Image (cartoon, rainbow, N blue to C red; front, side):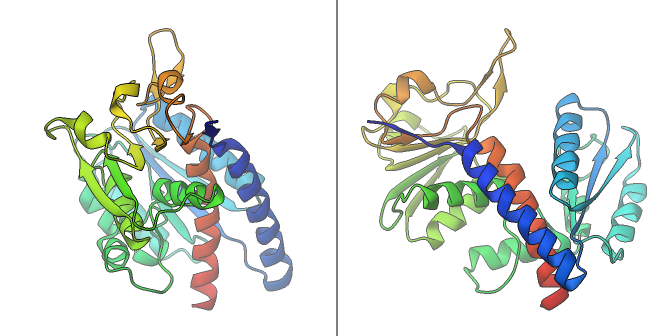
Length: 286
């Protein structure tokens, strides 16, 4: 029988642990974790995401500030704000919501965040440590971190397994490749130019899909007994949310599968909050 990986329930468990730890840090060490979320422009989805992150942080006892800029904000203005946040002792985590308006260079903006406050784990120093599989304290991109947490929670063994990632983004695919490789999986990454994608996905013991293409993966693309992680969140013309995987068709073949909604999505925010607290502890205690 197929296991439905309940990201919503696991996120609730993680949030409860985070809330308890925040209360302990505040009471025993006078540490109040703080996060700043920066958004430029009026992208509707981004506004919803940032508001949800802000509200969740407040609910968990984390100090949260939301910095909103108009769509025509200059790069120098945004960089000035990031530098202020870098030097703000009340802020442990900085997140710049993507996508950014076209006049802003995401690479320059991301690199401006000091590694110790880079809650998205995208600064080249943090990415380098991840790919080098270095020990120590450094942040990891929140969605990949949440996916690894789900796999561990459901006792899905990665040792020697064939893992295929469809989607090469710096937010999901590339950090996840390193995490899976560090866990001794054999990892293949596919993109839009991959030839005969279906032949590749059918080799996967662990299949992770993050493309933004609704129902890209059909039942015929999946190996029987595979674990399928659907990162995609797509809104259809009727308003319903769906993933990059044809859930109803694929779940009959899969050993385990994440639903959309209720799978990876809640885990991303939960791990963002969890990592904010990590950054606060690392900053205060090394």
